Image (cartoon, rainbow, N blue to C red; front, side, top):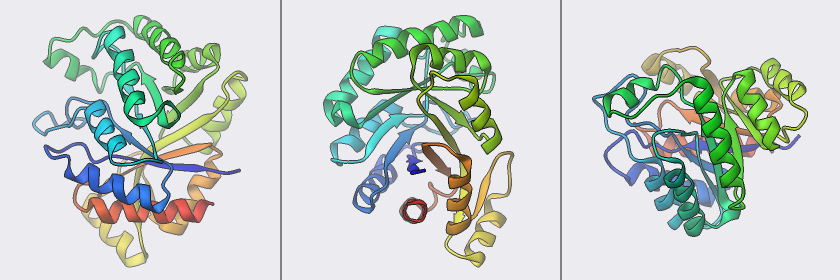
Length: 263
């Protein structure tokens, strides 16, 4: 099975330069997609900056002509329905509809403090699921690709009712297969997760020593990470390298090596 490989942009900074550097490298090296987190600050670090996802994606779309751009994922409620759909309409006007992935999610207890800090309502899970279904339906009418992100059965049911792809963060191959079997109307199951990728053994050892370990982290050499992604059975794999702020160009180049290895 062919696997498309994407990378999250280094947006947890106050400069657009790292994201634009990654974008140009990815465009030239054949990476399939570039994605942006939709957080007001890096998870668990409210003192650090974060670029707005749609601003970063529009800038990336303007300096590239091939690579897909998308959210991972746009959280309902941070913007009103009309504004959120219009943000995708604007992104499609910059990039072209065929280059946009509109991925939506409900958010969870880990992202809830962002809403609270800025006085943004944080409705019940059922209300947020209904909001995902509303905006995903409207985004699909724009002619862009739509994903619904989330690991719950209820999220899978939304994706199934709409007949759109489902994105699972940090899932195992077994969880991806279970999601695929559980929702026959879902055309694709896609994967995203954190990675550490080394060019060789000494490189990955140094990266592990600097960044440590965390639940769900995929780490190894280019060949090992490529084998892991192929084994997941997902149509898309979107990696979030832990080292992409410190060395954005090198991280992007390494992800592109993984992309070459899975072809």
